[in-house]
Amino acid sequence: MFLFGVLNACTSPTQENTDSNEVNNPELATNTESKIEPIESVETFPMPEFGMKWGKINELYPTAEFIEVEAIKYGINGGGNGYDVIRNGEPLFFIWLDGAHEEISGILILNSNYIIDEKVHVGMNLNDFLAHYPNSKSFNNVLCNDECIWREKEGFMIAVKTTEQQRISKYRPYRGQEIFQKFIYTDIPIYRIFLDR
Image (cartoon, rainbow, N blue to C red):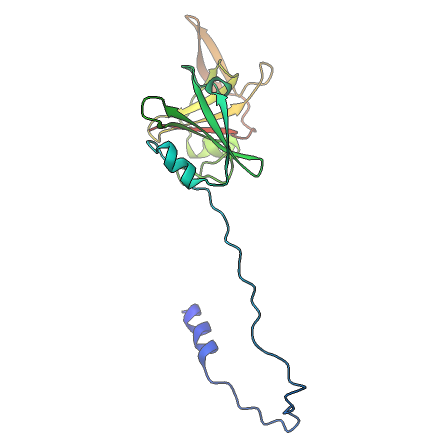
């Protein structure tokens, strides 16, 4: 309704000017043409998709920088390399490819601009995350010393950067493993999100 009212106001006839002091001299009249500068198109970097071929990746991100790094850097087991996708010096995500088909088989979000599951993003406080997913349990990713929460139903895993001295959870040892007991420190941001097919 409000938009319709605004449109009507813009298109209704204006009141005729009856002021006798109106400027009729063309030399003194000002140009009332709108001088709107063209808006520069904002480059968007959509989320990559599983199964996307290498050629499509390059087409989708023509101005991105791709830096090859070992997947183990991000705690991804199994060896092999992947690519940090960077725009203007800012990391967006890390992708790794299925060697046989040269297509994306893994995506790791590194940038807060990408929101998944309608709310989850890099930089989100773990307290807020746990308010949405109260039945979560964490585990220690020994490959990169992060603590992670795996949401199998939703198809993603979040990671927070912790240290031996400052863990988010208390664990109990069991047959060489650490079993989650409870959260003890949750005022910490998410800094990586792994997506699963």
